[in-house]
Amino acid sequence: MKKRSKLLAWMLSAAMACAMLTGCGDQQTAGTPGGSEEKSGGTGQASGQKAEEKDKGSVESSGGGSENAEDPAGDTAGMDELVPEEGASLVLWMDNDDYNDKITALWNASYPEIPLTVENVGTTDARTKLELDGPAGLGCDVFVQPHDGVAIAASSGLILEMDYYTDYIKENFVSSAVDAVTYEGIVYAFPLSMKTIALFYNKALVEKPVATWEEMRAFAKEYNDPSQNKFAILWQAVEPYYAHGFLGGYGYEMFGENHDDKTQLGWESPEALEGMKFFETLREIYPVNSADATWDAMNSMFSAGEAPYVLTGPWSISDFSKAGVDFGVTCLPLLPNGQHPVTLSTVDTVCISSYTEYPDAAMLLAKFLTDEEAMTLLYETKTEIPASIIGQQFEFVAGDEHLKGVLEQAAYSLPMPYIPEMTNVWSPYQKAFTAVWDKIQTPEEALKTAREEFNSSIVE
Image (cartoon, rainbow, N blue to C red):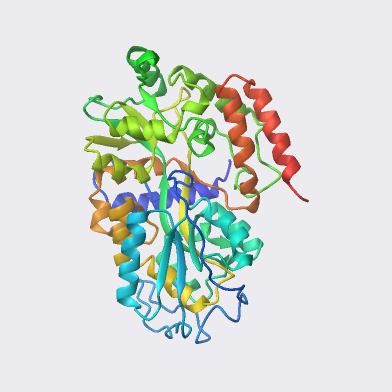
């Protein structure tokens, strides 16, 4: 029997979250991202030269966290106070202007002696931007990135370990999220939020959401009118984060059964091929070229009330709500084999740059971003699911009907593999989906080409 340990850990987290919610039925659910959804940009600002990774960045005492594990609030009583460096000032990279303005005000109220500048930098862009800006002294002190970047950032010395808060993190965050920020046994980040994609539907256009992709196909046959730019469902069709679930639902295991073996990517497997063949048929449901299956098309048409269905994640909830759309969220429809698509899921993580001049102050900021007041702000501005145990018990999570649907799909999700080689997956994977969608290559040809590109990128 296949072990699928990380998927099972995710589902156990799901069950914990679902226990806090009503209406989940008998499904297992948990908190989960997405990594590449929101568009953002920004410029770096000086933050100093590279810190010494162990001695400079940590404690005023010799001990780690000593909280009582039974205390769901994660009380830090018993820990020696972490003292920020004299004259410290910090730069944070985050991807939402509304959040950025408000988190600055929250921080300044608690730490008025440590000036904070927050710059709009996309979570999926932050690591590569820091690789360029850090050595020049133009980077940040703290940044948020998806968890699949933690291992490569840690292995390249780009981020500091969370040595002062290691025990605290292990005791106060869901286990799958702790795994996501751990590399070679060392905790390198604070888990912030968890997410995956789900099926969003407009209640004015859909009385009851479809349960299968065959039902979606039948609905699209009646509803679609490409000449009027009218489509039953829209999504970023060839983006791997959105497309992987169709392969995963046919049993494809990325990087082997435990998702940690770089030699077992699996694009040559019968399961991957079967899933890609099904993916090829989805062009009939959403008959546009890959270049037109964009975030902007999905977001604008659903926000305008013109699309019955879209595939997106919790990062869209706020926009759709502000647009006045009455919508619901549920699991992705079942595949022809009767299985759920196994979507990719993400933990957004808070990391400390190894180029910071103020590692202790930066560590205080990293923890601050996961405290209750900051997590409430994250929900209010981005509608994100906390990765902390107590956070998933907050009333705003338990009472949110939209998050409930995301959590239902999360039970059928796989955390993006943590190994550094994951960063080499995205480009060839997207090329394969694009080639199949645009009928440039057959599924067999596209997967073979992608596999060859990935293999050429791996250094033994």
